[in-house]
Length: 412
Ligand code: ADP
Ligand code: MG
Image 1 (cartoon, helix red, strand yellow):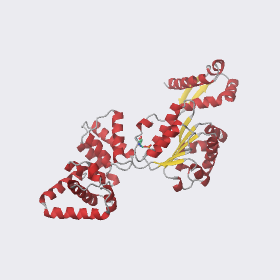
Image 2: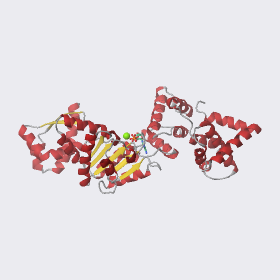
Image 3: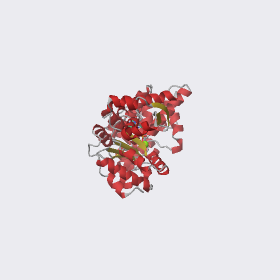
Image 4: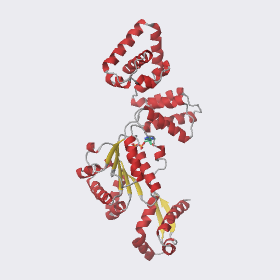
């Protein structure tokens, strides 16, 4: 089984080599090579003799390394098609797309993608790499986690082949280093990266970096590196808004070929606001729950699951979710609630949403106002008073509120 895999990998390599050397050289130097095994991403090949080895090393090592690299570290699922665009990522996505069309040929070099955990940095960086490989099959694209880069560097010191390490990286056409913040405090690694960076940049090779924060906030990274990051473009990835969260879930569900009721999809998107990874996590737990317990996925099941899923993080209801429940209840379009309109029925629903947001979230009056038609804090305060007064005087109104309260409360 193992031999087979090594053989296939080597066969793929040969196909590329064949396009790059003369038929005679191919027959002489490459056909006799045997693939032995592949393990931990290392392909072992066997050559007929020491002389053969030295000759290959001298003449063909670059191309051999290059084609082996083509078996690269990119995850095909992390492509542009699967990356949902939203306000939260528009700049980063379009800069990334531009880079993928013209690596090294845009002003975005380096391209630094930064933002909090689970917001799509790795996905986007890989999507760029995948597209570059698609558009420019002869370019070598290397994606590497910075922890791995650091470990390889340390190994190279141990094995006394630091030059090989540097040369290896210097021959790459598109270098993607993920989570560059881990280089903080590692002066030697930063130093070697600095030289690799300069070399690649000078040759017009594309560099793509990701980090969990903006360059100005990075500590423990040398100034000369930080200043180089600013040569290109730093684009941030932000938390996705509600519509984007729904779109992301719908895309995942579609890709997985699963049936998920629309209300469940919306419920997840309304409830999980922190980042995309958690959103995906919730979806996966829900699917697992339903298949393990042989239950159909219903809103009820989703509510129970979410309740457990996020218990530890002391979740609070989101303003978005409150608005959604209130709008559904009064059969109103949510866009109206978020607009400035003063239509009577909208005004009252909006006041109710403000009231619940005040009672059930830790959001400030100003934030609540902003979410509800761009109103100021005084308007929210007035809304809360109005709702309280009406509850005291109008029994039917009070019943509405109590029913809504139940609907909004997650434990219900
Ligand atoms: P980060 O590297 O910023 O921590 P990832 O790139 O690993 O985040 O993203 C976490 C998960 O969320 C991945 O499974 C990724 O596919 C998904 N994801 C993030 N952003 C998007 C998006 N805009 N569209 C679709 N999926 C996304
Ligand atoms: Mg990542």
